[in-house]
Image (cartoon, rainbow, N blue to C red; front, side, top):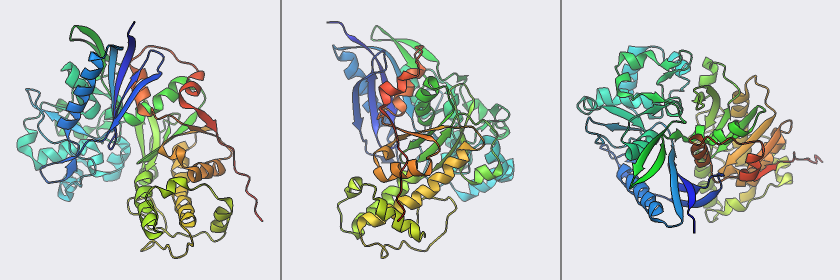
Length: 462
């Protein structure tokens, strides 16, 4: 029996760690999910357990190598961004993998802007709205001034995808999609690291930049395997669309963050864009992608837990709620804000506390929550579209299963061709494609993503 040739992709999300096997036509052969327990850093702040993650990757990799059915040809990695692993001269890991939600000391931030200039100007030049540790460049600045004894030992700082690649190759590299994702490191107009990176001599900790499509051929247990350099998950999720679609589109990637990605808008960001939480991601060729994001999935989870508690429902009841036209039209008659959002910083009417007394049922309150989230979603999508000629919106990720969300999207964007793409492959597929030289065509998404065109709602206003 001949072995099946496969590419392994480790797709590391903040919550779910996944690994996939793809055959040579990018068909998924195996998929495994796990959640790993967190550890804490020196301040007791919860964070990814890098050792547990390494062990999980190694165990799965070895199990596939030992499997008689598979012949591993390549490996790649897609992971969340804004996370550095710092190595000393011997290649040892020096610090915990700091969590990008960890608050950064105000005095360190003040020092940064005192030394390097205006907050808004730097945010605009680096296309990175100020977000503390989520701007991973600031993690390096923070280490330099908060833990100088550790900082002085760093030889290389690798973003997480490149660190996972390094585990297999022993070679340190940087690549565009990780450098370009809200890190505060890259000056998009200059096409180089920002001046502050050189002024703080942080550039010397950055390994050489290689293309995202680069791979390193190694021999492992007498087998030749091509090892990718890793890719940032948002850029990776976008890749199958860019490679197979010629007409301009916007991709709405939903999950913990709702991110509107427009690869057809490469204008420089304005101050107003930055204030609206717009940013740039980078395509694998270094071109910018205009994006706007908000913490939708996170907020949704927080609010739904409260709704379930208030109406005495099991958590999960919300997944059964279908769009109800009559409820929707009634709520829209006297439109108001009823929810106090906790994790979203976009401008909206502020209220001191959530008012659920106005809603007779769980379903009604849930529809109202979705209306209020949708208002912000519309705003962020319009920001990402800017002045570009877009005719299609693809929606992928967790919210494609949410009937109310999808119906509202089709209603508000009825002048666009709105498609739901149901692919649990998310960013893994892009990671597998980027290191292959295989050309793909227009039919590709149809085959892999179960595309559905959403019909605009015909609302009967009585």
